[in-house]
Length: 433
Image (cartoon, rainbow, N blue to C red; front, side, top):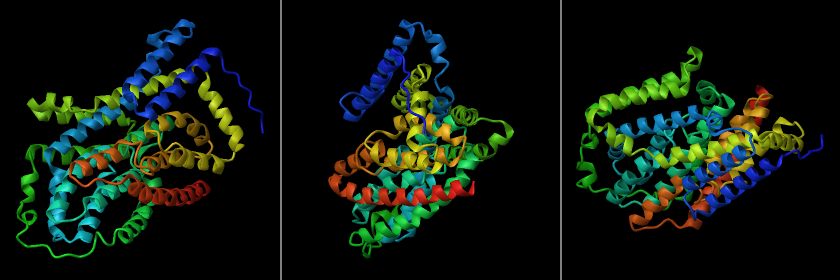
């Protein structure tokens, strides 16, 4: 084992201090995280300019603009698709097909969340499904808190195999040059394995809330036509076609030298053209705070690279794991999945991606283990990630709050179980590859 020699120059130490304080402020939730990240980036660039390391124009080129454009394009696709009512249509159709029987509603809704999480980040998934879930559960006198907690958990681990499944997946895949097809084939079996295990545990834990009950045939839920959920048939068909083309393109695109950001922007811009007069509305509804948060975060990471801090961190990790790929995977799984769980998974992904890439050159499952770890870290505790807060807010607004200890008790146990299963799966994958 080589001894770790600290070779960081003074400006690097200053930027490291800025990064640490940024993480602390973000964790405290006292100041807006987007404002914090952008100001921290500006401070970092300021020190680089004052020490004649580089000018602002050269610095801007170091930011991961392809990932930012990809995220922006996917937000446009999600915004247009959600506005069509296609997801509400399917969810209401599923609820009616179950006859309102609680366990059947639970199973069908969780399966639907699993499928759409392959295409959407957990945040838009909860924004789409959460309000409808509350309304359906109210109509059949079912505890919506059970479904909201379960949806948060399932939407996160269902996102493992999809490059568009979460923003952290995008960040890590961009750094590690992971192709969408490879990611899908490598991690889909793990998500499919976790789903039935999780469903069995949740069904047993919530057995009282999911007990069978007869639903009055005159219930308003059964009288609503699912087609009424479709707000725009044009958007309905356009969303279905656009998302289908995008999914196929992300899988076969690398073989045709078509990058994910280019494909997503092409589909998003085409959908905007067909949206005609509603383009301004869709663009205004984008989550611009997330986009600017990524710009600020990637800017800080770029400054850390310029000063050699990332190289020092890689060297430090190499000393910790002693070049052992399995130890590196344990680090990438358990540190973001458990230790750093209170921090939003996007900055965690951005921080650890360069380290994962270094080991990924030796064994490709290392960056994959970071994707798994950051997603599990998103639901293992009730605070720290936006989808969790959406679930808590929806329940509170509906008049029946989710107890944070109850959320933690369920999610933490499942999260630890998922980490153990994922560790075994990644070890097997590393051995096979």
